[in-house]
Length: 467
Image 1 (cartoon, rainbow, N blue to C red):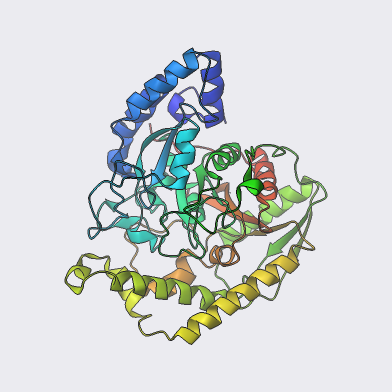
Image 2 (image 1 turned 135 degrees about the vertical axis):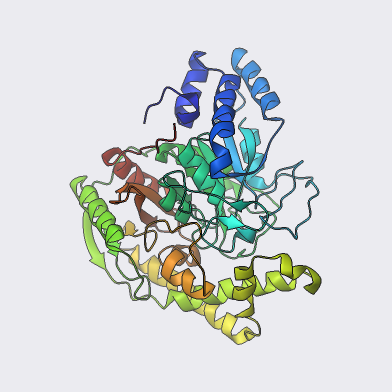
């Protein structure tokens, strides 16, 4: 992807310009913020902007002028989702019931960004506490899809997906506990990487703490790898993150151009149940399978005989939401999203034995996928059951929507904690983006990035025409 507008350039392109002194971080920030000021009123991707970003860009510009850039992202604009703590700003989580006071400490991912010199330009919108896949919340309203503003960009990382597609800078950090990076990436026509659990430390923990991760949403696969290199770090505040000796200072772009020759790719048609997918999703998977085959991979369909992932994830999701709602006084619960209240009420009184059974089945699913990866390097599947819904699509039954409209294909890889990436795969007849999902064994982000890059080269990313 090439562009002349700095707001539309990839992070790698910006860094090359900084090194040549053909662009400065201040010039780039001004281009990005001008584009946001012009286009965001309709899209509504931001919860809050950072008034100190120009100062940070100026400091970065001085470092580049002195020949001493701070790190791998020095001067590159980046956003973080409003489920992630950014010191000096409130973490509202899309809710009217959260504390409006600024938090004191940065989340681990934000520390990684700042250590590498990135310029945080703002916090992006999220569904309330990240509970659903349609991009609206009580606090900030509706976030819209840049490809067609009558449609949702997806959620819960709604603002990050919309910002990436709209050209509001190259790098965006989202979170994913059941598909909240991959679903908005799919519906917004961008790249979304859910890393392995533990790769990016989490603090404070969110609603779906046992399976949730933070990760990149970008316009290019190489930028996703670059961003993962900055935020994949060790932090003592997260007792479940990978140890420092297993993380190091890895650049995930290394080997990304090596292709997929001689890899074995399993096309997954059934993630533990008869998951819905429309013909556009099937066509996207078939096209991706053909492209990977032409690139030298061996591709075949499989059925790993997984347990019913609907039952497992429904327990995790529903009980987590019930616990969340019950953490607020009854006098304030009316301020929550009605759909969140409905989903939580449906899981009230679930016995502890049901949760233990769900955990046992989650581990069974993880073991099943681990055995599958003894034979296959990659798993290819749809990301979403259909194209981006309308922003005002009704949700009569949230639990049913989880499995019919939102996350039937993504929740599996959250439960098994594997890395999974979503990449664009052309367009449907109505002009909305299509996508596919690629997963690999735990901790093999290198393989999903190589496969995603192979598809990206064969099916280049296109930005929506907003001008």
